[in-house]
Length: 206
Image (cartoon, rainbow, N blue to C red):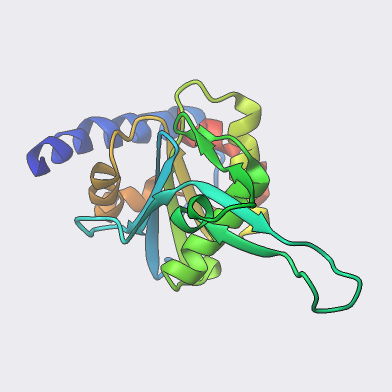
């Protein structure tokens, strides 16, 4: 499996580098300060896996489901809404369920945002402002959806660097690629996002 993953590196990185050189000559590029870690997020079917670049296995794997229970009561503190994630959401009765991911793509953006916050902050224990995020996407995703996802990570989560591509075929492949020193040039930086906006994703990833 390891040799299979490594075989993807030269072709994928070369293709990305060529695309960047040909289509984005005006980008400022380069990270002013490298993120402390890179978090890898992989959507598969209706599940989500997450962990750190360079590791052999994801640290978190769960159904991409968010469940909400309760609501506002007549007095403060009564029947407060409680949110559950993954298996806990599926195991409990009476929850309002939202599927963040279906068919390996974002299905509910509000639920996806909640799920990512839970996974990154609570499960992985890192701050968004200190990490880069690399994730996969559906090859059939629309331009608007790609831009909305890019906007989510830079504006809502505040990450300093981000990248997504439909060419990743497994979490392990992504982890290995993202840990390669040459991959840093592939990342979209905050400066690039500020300069061009969400459509920068089309220049650096196809």
